[in-house]
Image 1 (spheres, rainbow, N blue to C red):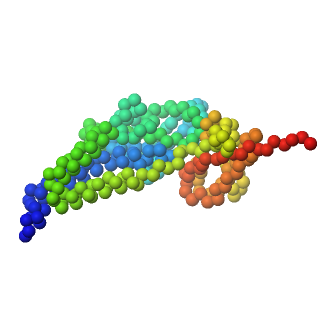
Image 2 (cartoon, one colour):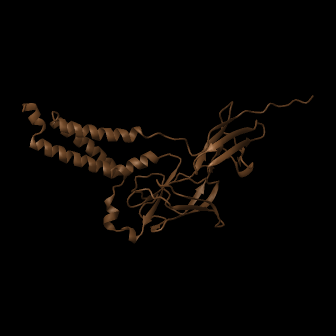
Image 3 (cartoon, rainbow, N blue to C red):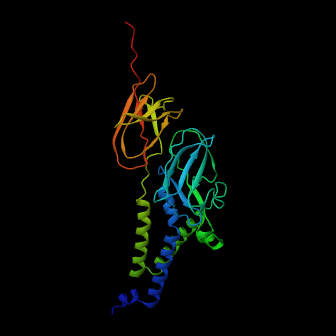
Length: 300
């Protein structure tokens, strides 16, 4: 066997490659929650997640109550723990319920946040200042029957620890490549690791904001006090009315069906937008709109 080939399959090189691969697999596994949080950031959704494992929780019920204790909005998280709630301006109480879990979390809070998620909602009270979809990430604590204890609490890493582990894995990779640059096995392991990391970042596509903005077509400024109405097309039924604030924002969450949205404001031409085939429940309708000023009529 040629000397170069022998170098590739040297016993020490094989052991090094195996240990190196195991270390990288562990690194990828432990930093996976950070990738999930990164992918969901500014996605137009909020996420309900397990405060211990960082995993999203499906079928959690989220309710929004007004100051009188009446439920004004409610929804259920999907298979990826995602939810959407349109919250009109005002003060509300949030209730999150799922069997075996407790809210608010005692372990992940806004003040002390060891989670990989940002934009945390850990209290029951929330003050909404403008229309838009709620995108707060909500931690819920597992109960005793789900393994809540010291060891399970310390099993996952926080955001800073994951960043350190990611940098450490890159440093280890560069060091091993420098020492064993002639080894095909080492290069194969590194290329596979780099491809997975690249895939995580390439697949991230920043989606639209969780609200639409209504602007003056000429000066691009947001328009205040626009009356925005959404109708169910089939029976021409008015479903909801919103009035924009100084930021000109609006947003609707709809079920499958056909809809029409009307934008009206004094001094502007009325705008109508049609959505004839919404195919998914919980769809966010929040596109930017430009309104033209109406021509002033002169007296004859």
